[in-house]
Image (cartoon, rainbow, N blue to C red; front, side):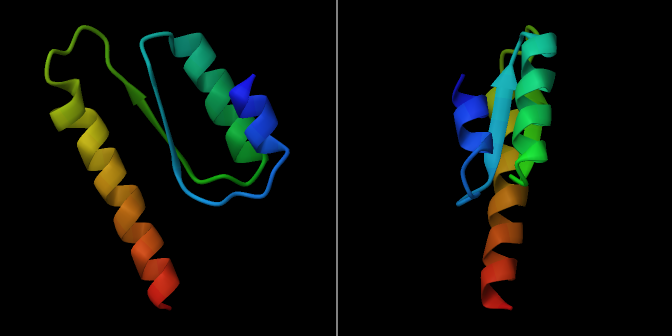
Length: 72
């Protein structure tokens, strides 16, 4: 429901979809990207250090890209 609502609005920041529910995560990813949002998808299936190993690199990548875009 949140992805549906956001997809109807202008993008204002990057989004990370993180879930163990692969089907729902892809649905959210597709809905947001169709609304022109910049989206990274992080699947964390039984990974104890998923924040450090998956989410943090995705967040860093998105924020660096956002910073570079704003500096241009």
